[in-house]
Length: 410
Image (cartoon, rainbow, N blue to C red; front, side, top):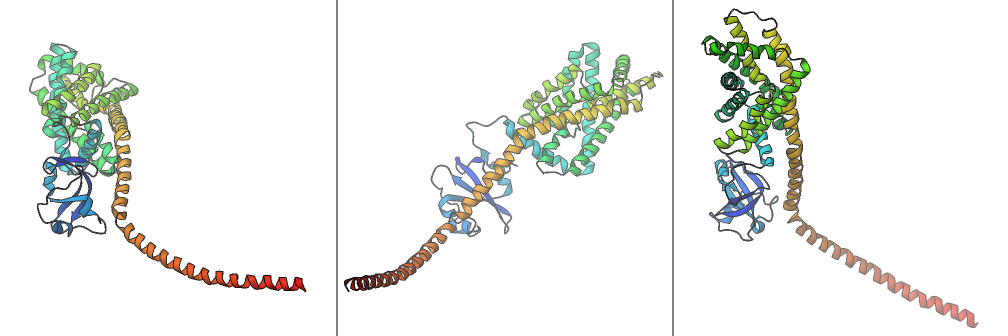
């Protein structure tokens, strides 16, 4: 359902263009009265008598409704039929519209029930883990580029099938700054989704390893896990920053695509880049490292330094922090400052101007009439007061002059 927004131009009412000036809530039947300004300089015929519409409107707030505005009674669902004006149907959103979409999506994620966050997090963990399985075979049999081209399937499943991925949800920071969700809702989502991602990834690692699917690539699986727990803290952190910068750019681009093909194309190249470059993704590592641990245990091999303790301290901790900085800090905060903060300021300013123009439009007419009457009364009083004073002074002056003249003659 598309939200009707103040200031937005829509093609509505017999394919004519209107700009929304205000939305008035109707308490009687819980419908909206949407105020449109006709851009074509004429008003269309009413579907119902004009008085019936205007009787539901606050005349004091909208005194010139009969002259300037057209009111249309609509259901909330009817908002989806109002389309932005364009020469042709848009196939993607503009960067500013993507930013607004990110806020709306973040608000929805923040208001999910806890059980849904956890379950959808498990789905996302499973999707990323299965992409890791395919990338492992690609790396072993073809080369690193093949693995990098396979791995984007995971994020494509997350975006299209619908699930909650911790790294992508770092973009919820835009909804927080826009005051659509609170800090508590943000941290709740991140915590439960992170846990769900971990559970889903580890379950896939268990099933793949003990199903024997990795028997022919066991060496690659164990080596990958061992290498990931042997980064120093700064290396792991910086690789996490770079990784989630690209992942969140991929998710951000997917918000702008309106087709499944467009969303897949949007996520492919950024994700392929981070895998090819060897950057670190916390959720992917929730699969790769446990898979190496399980594969070593299955084959009775003990590898010093490869365990869940080193996984948490040497990899997940610095990589997760880096992911937050790259996703929430660089992408989320950056685009908020570029698009959302300025847009918010403009909306508030425009709303104030519109409110003033609506409220003042008819009231000044009454005030001016009252002022004219008052000024006339004051003027008449002043005239009456001044004329007698002028006569008195005029009468006295000649007497004084005559008296002076008589004295001089004597």
